[in-house]
Length: 453
Image (cartoon, rainbow, N blue to C red; front, top):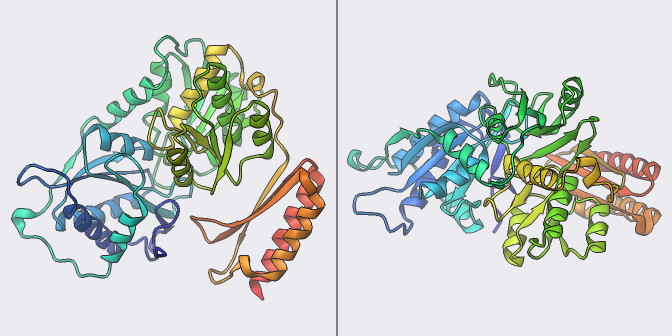
């Protein structure tokens, strides 16, 4: 059954436009609360399910948080509020506090005009499809407030930040530290602004922090993992050894070396996998996505590391990791999952795994990735009408076949719909940069024209 609201990463959209409105969020909170109240939690008599709500730093979070907690309390669910916290911190705190669910109000890497919501189950994973269906099935029923004696209560969670900082530090080996390392950390004016630098500093690094002055409007604005030029400039100006860029909710990671070279999620995943292979602790293989650079897949084959591709999105990476009983996966956008360290993608913990490899081997980012050269890859996003079905369009199909024939076995074409925005994403990859650029632009133009006919 198709879900009406939940996409690959929760619900997301423009603030003030359905469904990102206070009215919808109150009903969503009530519906989620009804599902939770009906669950078998083995609670003590009179005890109610408890949900932890976190958010990033965008200004609309206050409004949506209030509406959400009102709906939950009306359904008889207790609420804990963490304030601004990374998505992955909420996933951790649910398990640490033995709560029944967690909710994050965030639009991840989007700008402040957008917002969204993500749900986590009691085990720290994204909600399974059946629970999302159950919540959606109750959205049209009227809110019937529980009797006053059964209403939920709201409390502020004390020391959420400190708890999460210690959790992150525990993922880094005790016999190593970051002393002598000078780094720039870009927090994207998002949810890690009061956390990421403290983690690195407490492990011994000299830290220069940028993107850590959120005002509700500047999240992801020309900073963070989606705009790394700010970090690249800062690393070189400060003569730092490296730089770390996170996104607005802290689950994406990009890194920069002292020469200002950018390392994306594919390269960082490769570093972690290669280090684990060297230490003989890589259990199973690695899960990538449809977007993973072909050079990474080929290099893993040379290293006898099993590799499979999931659909784009950390949710699908995690599904394959569970199915295969593997522990490592990621995508080039910077989502990296180290399932032996956390239940979900975490930018800070992923950075620490890369830093572990560098400190353990005394190598730089450039030295560690010298044996893999990424194929040129071009990604173009095209805004299209929601009614346009590119999959059944004969013109789009024909140009894709033509491009793939020209690239032969030295490249590939991927056309897909965004799971979070009304966009078609055209990706072309191959050994020839000239061919890659030509076909990406040509296919994008064909898609644009076809969508208007």
